[in-house]
Structures are given as structure tokens and as C-alpha cells.
Length: 588
Ligand code: M6R
Image 1 (cartoon, rainbow, N blue to C red):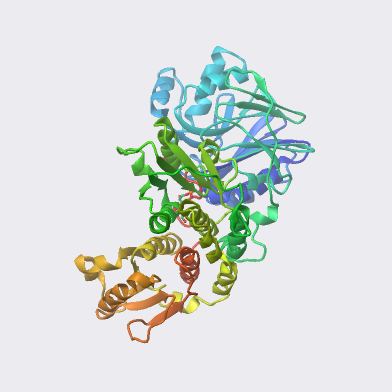
Image 2 (tube, rainbow, N blue to C red):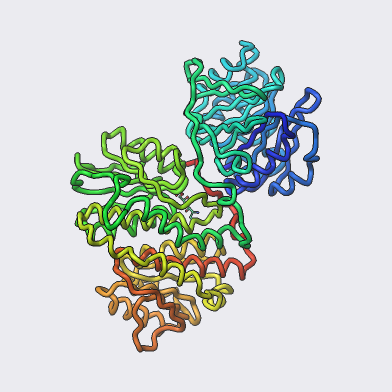
């Protein structure tokens, strides 16, 4: 949700800021802007639309060596030029990621003092409040410290003050912000990919810390305004990991990385059919709650079926935004698992904090290293997906499914199951090498599509239909196959696309009966299975390799992802940046 990049140094600032913003465009892409210092004055340029629109309005070679930039995902106020960041009030110019929940209250207070507002944003209250506090006390660090303690909500901020045009100030609360040093200057950024063209070393600001950065110096203060030293972190990877490398879209590139992602995740936890110490030894839990959002929630659904089947531990799966506002029942032996690619999803983070307050053990399954969820959980298990840029998650989903399957083995105490993971990378490669366009052609010109399956296949239906919805805007809905006859089968008419998933021997024939029911009512059935039957109840079939149930979902999801990709392409959709979405949802 919104991306921030700032630069101060000896090199020209605008090319660095624009290059960083392009890497962060997946965080929000409805408007963009920069503020930079030129001849001792602040200049602000903003545009509605993509970063390319901003780039077209700027002279990148401008002699400016300090600036802050922003790419926006609108929360308060439509995505037009005036509402886009940076916002300036009096002497303070600000870019903001997050939401200020008490902005109305603060705005009313400032209006009463005679301060005028120009935009519909929550953000504008920040420079206005900074400026108001600065009129009382002319110490920028103290003023920032005082101001951020008056804000409720989440924020990462890049700040410039007219009285110190040599410095960028940065601070955060519950929205990520990093600082990176390169030999000729410093960057601030919302996420590591923004700086990878220049360096892979960075430090992470903690909540309410404040940084003052100029060409030669970085000083970080804690919330008591004591100077502190921060640990330098190294990102394992290069800017290539965040680039298209010849692929037409990030979504396609990331799907094609899945065999590697599977191997990297497996090898990080397992050596010669034994768990390494990267997989923690866990006590015997009585029950497990899995809490997540979107696709990560569907991984939780897959995990529920696996853990209940193989480890005989009851699992409750909940969407984080619901879980945090309901009464939850724990025993002293409940484990709560939070799954999140970004590790910054606001609802998942809030749920984690609430569970911790209740004194319950927590485990994070996260992709982004050192993200908030990763840092706050009792146990943190990383998936090895690498940077995921496309808004629709694919390789992180596969990595999370792999890790949850490994965790299932750990919980089941039956290491023999690890043998089932052998050769899965080869199966992934083979599935990736197939052509899915012909199946997409049967779907792309419909407004609705249905996914049906039972048990773990239903969890995969949920993910398959979300991929189709978010990338191609087709109303794709999932149903438990056995439930159709209780009402939803009325939606089926001549040629309605139905994607039926059927991979489990134990219920194979039951699902076949349900598929026959929709076929008899005219559905155009794409049958995804691992065992062919000679019977005429489908129009097309995708035969996936037959492997043990514990690893089967890792394979089944691949055709679903590639079909969604091909459909979105046939419909000319903006595949990597679907409308209205952003990658990392750091607001409630
Ligand atoms: O970063 P997270 O895994 O916590 O994100 C959760 C969801 O926002 C995310 O999976 C979302 O549903 C994706 N757009 C799905 O492709």
C-alpha cells in the first residue's frame, strides 16, 4: 500500500527516486509524485496515474541531490493530482504510507487554529501538525517526535523541512521503512527492491524511531530521543530477482520460478530426509488456529486438511479481519499460525498482536525477511520465494503450501513422509512446460466461471477462483462439490465454464457424481485430476502427476495459476497490476 523512496547524496536524486519507485509500483499505482530541493527551494511534481506519467512531467537530469517520492494506493480521497503525495503545509513536506485513523479529530483541531487544508487525504494532517508544533518549538527532531505520538494508525514517513534542506527525516509506526547507504549517499524506501540497483545492505527503522539523514551522515534516535546504533542487514539476492528478465509479466516469471522456490524451501528445512534445526522442535499442541488473508488464508485451508489428516490435530482457519474481532477459544496448548507473504498485512499483524497479548504461542510463515510479522511471532519460519512483484501471488503461495506440508510432517512425527517430496520439483517443471492457452480460450469470453471440488481440492478451488477474479475480473466462484445441489446448481446453464478439481482417491467417485450433475445441465467442464477415468463427463482434462496427498496441492495449483494468467492475457488485462489492488495491504 503506497511506496516511498527518498535519496540524499552526491548523485542526481531524480533518476534514483524514479528507479526505486518503479520497483515499488506493485505497492500502489494510482498516482505518484516527488518533492526535491532545487536552488534552496522545494519543488513538488505530482501526476495521477502510473509512475510513467510522473516521469514524463519531470526533467530527470535536474541538478537536485535530495528528494522524496511516492507511489499511491488511494485510501482517503480519489486518486487525482491534488490528493497524491507529497503534501506540503507551511515548512513541512511529507510522503506517507499507512492510514491516520484520528485525522478528522486532528484536522478539526488545526482548522480551529486557522490552518487551511487543500486535499481529501488523511495524510495532509501530518505536515500541518508538524508545522503547527514547529511554531511552538523550533527543533525538528523534537517536533517530529511530538507529532508522531499524536497520530493514531499506521505510518511510514519521509519528511523535508524548509529550514533544513540538506536533510531527509524518516520515521515509522507499523508500516515498513528501510534506510540504505551507498558510497555517495543514502536512500529511504518502503521495501528492499527499491534499492537493489544500488546496494543490498540496509537497516530497518523500528516503530517510532526517527532518522535524520544528510549526504555524509545518518543519525537514528529512539522514541526517547537518544542516539542509537542500528544493525546492518544484508538482502540475499540481486536486483535481477526483482526484474522481468525477458518475461512479459512478473506473474509469468514468478510462476516459472516455482520449481526453484520449491527446492529452496524444502532444502532450507530438510537434509537427507531429516529436518534441520531451521525447523523448530514444537511441543505437543492440542489444537491450531491458522489466521491469514486472501491467498494466504487459502493456504491455511490446505494446511487444515493436511494437518488434520496426517497429524490428527484439529485446525481452525480464519480470515484475519474476522478473527481479530471475534471471541476466540484457546487452551494453553493452542498454537496460532499467521501466514503472510509480505509479513506486513495489517489485519494479520493485528491478529498476531492480539493472540500474543492473550499469552498464546504464535508462529509466522512469512516470505519477507525481517518484516513485522516475522519479527513479532514466537516462531518464524521463512518460505524461500524471493521477492514477489506481481500483485497476484503465485510462487509465494506454492512456497507456503510446501512449508505447511513440511510443518505437517513435523507435527505428525512421521519423517517417512519426507520421501514423498522427492521429485516434486521435476513434476513442477513438467507442469510448467505445458500449454494452457487452449483451456483459457474456453473461459475468457464468459462473465462467470465456477470452481468445484471437495476437501483439499475445494481449498485449491478457492485459490484458483481468486486468481481468475483478481487478474481477469471474471466473476469466478468456488463451491464445495457436494453443496451444489443445495442451491447453487441453479447458476449452471448452457456452456457455463466449470473447473472441477478431483485429486483424492477417498472421494473421487463422489466428486465425479457432482461433475456429472453440472455436465447434464450444460456446463463446459474442465476436469483437473490425477487419475483418468474412461467416462464422458468433461469437455477437457488436465492430468496432473499422481503423488501422495501431502504434496499433491503443490502441483494442482500450477494449472490454476497459468490458466488465470492466460485468461487475463486474452482479456487484455493489466496482469501485474490489476485494477483497485495493491500488493501489500498495510491498512485495515
Ligand atoms: O502479504 P500477505 O500474504 O499477508 O497478503 C495477503 C493477501 O492480501 C494476498 O494473498 C492477496 O489476496 C493477493 N492479491 C492474492 O493474490
